[in-house]
Length: 190
Image (cartoon, rainbow, N blue to C red; front, top):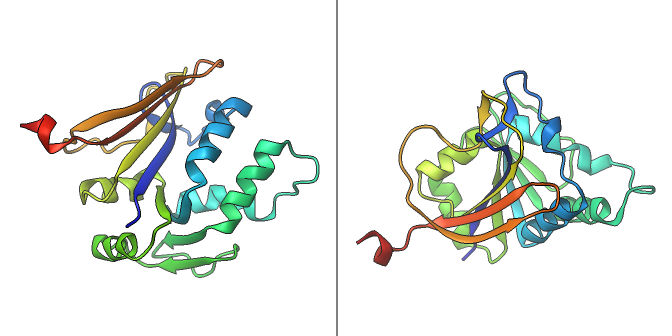
């Protein structure tokens, strides 16, 4: 059975994009990118909202000739995985191994998790919020950048409560902090 992971690059105050939709402050350097690559290497299928897909589809056609090794590595990882894009309005996709679903169905995701050994990732905070609320997310990986943006698109849902156990942590040379969480164990919640 696969794990469903959620990985987000976020501001210290918990936003993936600022109030204007900008996220240039979250561009990973080599050290952070290599860490992201290592996490994403186990993913066989990405589940995306339309906006996240629109951002990441650039990896499909990026000219890799003059790119550093960690960029080429991520492109290979991304291109090798299947993609599911949840969108009511998108009619066509421009990447291989990609299909469109009109609505996020937690039962479909449960079946997908049960039918594969390769991990799944959920990308985009809106779709991730649905998966988190449905109890589908097994790991949350946050890369917190040393910037406060004040408002924007939240990396985690603002409603509801989720008890978590810290699984891993790391500080990078550029001030980014990585934290990884899983659902709180039953023993810890008693």
